[in-house]
Image (cartoon, rainbow, N blue to C red):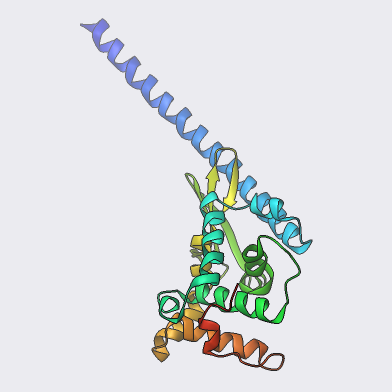
Length: 220
């Protein structure tokens, strides 16, 4: 009997020890992934600042983000006013800005135009550069960062892709533009109308016809 009791106690201690080792490994892995996330974000910002080639920029983004960029570019070429009313603000703004670039011959690139438009033309990511960021956080295969004033409320999201982090642009843009989009709710505007307001606010001194004509395809 004593032997059985002793065996049982030994097994319990072994299980406790195994759990402790497992927890320590998990914490170490999360610490490593946190460091990699911080490094990835630094490289991403540097690549954007240096206007890196499209393949490098896309390498920082999830596959779903790349697919969404292609889809949004198709929408910019085909959506009419009725379809535009189904868009969120950040989508509608990207579409009308894309059409303005096309109409006024502003393009500096021949491919992956929506990628460059969102990274440079839209100034969405500039909003992040002008605020103080909080610490990065990692939970399993999801990374995030919020404002220093509210670090638990993310404004950028990242996915772990086997060996590295990638920016989830599809989920990040609604978070970055959430404050702006609240204006549409207060004024009872559609996302498309708010997009046109923002476009006019930015470009009214440079271009004419910043109006609902941009809600229609312009003959791509």
